[in-house]
Length: 358
Image 1 (cartoon, one colour):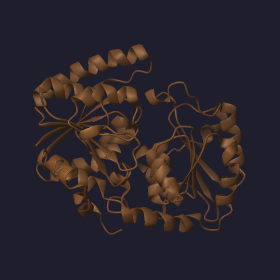
Image 2: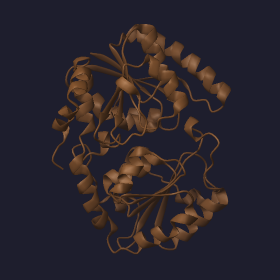
Image 3: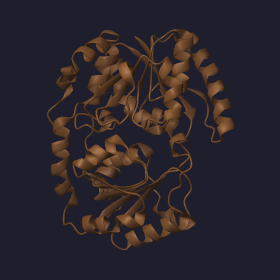
């Protein structure tokens, strides 16, 4: 089987990289297509993934429309030479349109549910894979699985924490480590919303730095006084940093969910709701607040704990016991397509065989 995996965000490289490895080991061929955005090329090269760039990333509405057209044209050129049997993505309109034009199936994963994006790709998509906790209903095309996207690469069968990683971050043994995440608020589902101001960011980080070692992961530029806190190690190591942290505070749902899967308590500062975050909050691993000022008491409570990772590790173990190894499920689902779709529709419990001892 020949598969094109279209990437729209650096997190999607992590989402599909183990799948690509397993499919390739079984004799299949996987090609990643991407736009030149953030660390996508760097990550694909770091993990040794075959890829082709189909354009640059545009920020304006007009630029996004032009970029969509150009990327579809380039994707068609790639498809003519690569001749894929199937397209796989995380809600990619480009992959969906190209699949329709080439008369090949497109399978999408989804966890954000941006209505504008879904309306465009859903008509050209055969199946949409979502978590059981996902709020939206896409009808007969939807396949629900018992897990989270982040379990595709952070499930214990895929990820091993480096217990010496704090030394690489120069964090003293007795210090608490806090990872702070700022997002750019430029995604389509963020339209009309803004995050913390530069002044608020500075106040938050400097207050935290009096009580803990603070490291910042940021999609965009930082106020000059905060540049010294920026994460300086290669981007493919960020999950080791999250696994080593005592607390995460951030505006991004993906990184908050990654921390929950790793057993690191997460303060999620964002007014937008998400099914994954809601479920992880039910396990006591994520705490959502609309504004940073509302989270102060919970931050103080967690930082005052003697060993927060041990405490939240119990909640993590309970959560993982219920969830599947998503990469294992996805590899089976794509490898056995289209029979797999009929099977999971008939027997949703079939996925339980991908639940592994943790």
